[in-house]
Image (tube, rainbow, N blue to C red; front, side, top):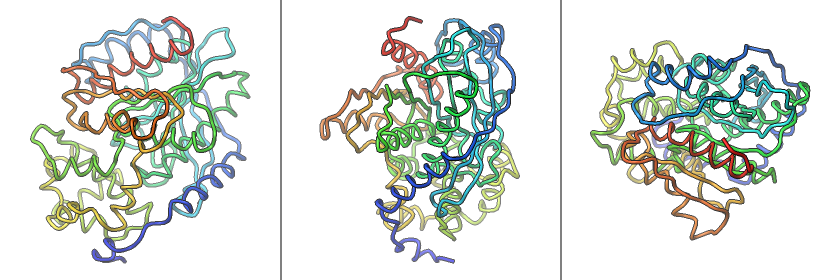
Length: 410
């Protein structure tokens, strides 16, 4: 076991080695055959309910936004596909995701890959859309209007038996890349063709979208446009803001998010002792149970605290001030905005976002003058937009923008 001093001193794997490893992994996984099953159809009545009544009942009704009715029903498929875990020497694994296909006479559609936000349960994921309102909203707005929508669950969600890979750089990119490959196999079998590829994601999924976009561009795979909502573009800066710049207005679920992150890095990067170093002893047992899915968020919140600074050990908080050592180096490598992008990008932020402040979301636009590259804009969702509000606003903005690129109307 690494002691706390070792955690600070151990060096990370080189970027070059990691990049080569991931590329080999994607080729191996691509050779496997995806399996899929129909999980039903959302008719127009169901899609209308998603856009109206369910938005209220699921807690997304606070932000003022209206959505046009969907134009077509949607066929839903759950996909299982082979992948690998780059952090574990490309160990084989099985992952899952969702494919949503417009139920029309057409056989060719634009393709949208949606990367979902933070969830606190293994089954609250795209391949089980009845457990995920954000997924249902994307189905209604995009698949219900002529886009094929695909959405990876990530490792640790859906059918995956792996531990949660929350915010783990290469495993997240791998799950997304191999879901894209698997989806194209399934769509070909269903005799569905796809045109331009678009990417979008919210919160954790915004970060995953940027990570995925970076990977696709490195492989020469063209993306027509990408758009995020409340994206944690710089993971280390986001964590530092949560802890070192903590505000009373911050979301009380941040401690839960950081718990998933710490345990994921401990598991995927073999950082033994990380969680014991970071989390106060009185909260560590509940934290482990929460990460493993043995207790839900409500029980975790009751057993811990909504103040992330009080949740962490003073020693760990002091270490974060300099952010040196292997753990912090790995998190530092998980930023995705410091490259010259070929793909147009819109980053939507909310002025009162309680989890991801505008300064983090605006990083790609602010960095653009240093590198040049394709169109990069930060989009303001307005003074009433909190974390969910930014997402709800982004869905309409992305739909309009992507349609404009395609030369389509609503």
